[in-house]
Picture 1 (cartoon, rainbow, N blue to C red):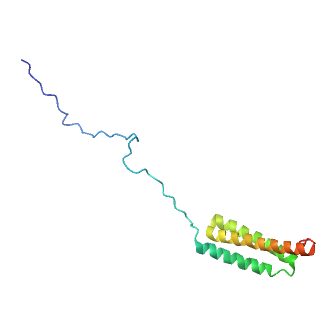
Picture 2 (cartoon, helix red, strand yellow):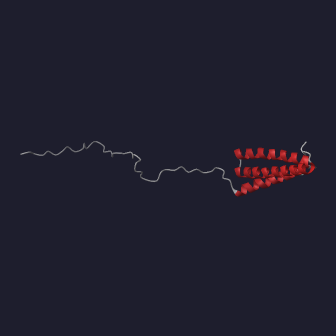
Length: 130
């Protein structure tokens, strides 16, 4: 006859710790963690409109300094360069929406000045800028 002996139980003084298993990733337990990116200075329509209005006023004021096509074109070039420098500063340190409006309207102002110079050149046959 065989007598079965009971297996020894856990030591009553030892702390019981649950087994921690790291999931392999083969069967994800939830949605994947996704980063949330927030724009620190979002571009708004109001900012673009404000920059466009300011640049339009700036170009008009400088354009009014010109007395003929040559001086109008050169004042517009100078005003546009100053406006774009301001836009670069605004992109780095300020409101990028305003900088966008300034850049768009400045490009449009330069296009108008180029068209005026081209029309004058086509009608007179002489290059008007020097």
